[in-house]
Length: 219
Image (tube, rainbow, N blue to C red):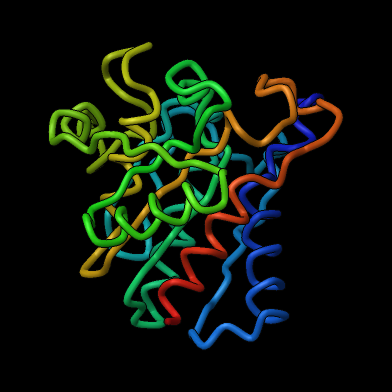
């Protein structure tokens, strides 16, 4: 944890996107939500075996406290739905597994919408900051539906297998009727594409692609 200074890369991209959309005067209603928390030990810290209840009533068993990012992302996604959005895009340095899959070549993108994927893919090629679509198969959801005490578990049943896909499947359980995309940016956030969050020169990726997507939508 001591080295994970850049693990707030998704939050930074969100803030940068909102600022850019404002300065560019994009004709689109855009709301940025930044879920902030500190993963600190204390008498009230989340611990393995705890069962949490999300805003939509689904229960989550905490199996691994290192998979805390998806818990606050679920909160943010559910809160975003209170604004009746047409599109929800979440950005996070969620899994080291996406770096294994894609390296620093592209942001791993999971989405329930072919239309949104097409817009983001086009934007990525225009900006040079590419995205790559990853699968959201039902088997990944089943791998998260493995708790004996809750609706979901925050880590997959099959250890070491498809970590990015199962994390995305977990988030999908908190999405209702809207176009949604989850960008796992753990491989692109630093200048060397490594998991050392102390790397010199954080990239800010994929802020340019998100802004281009918003601009295309505004037109």
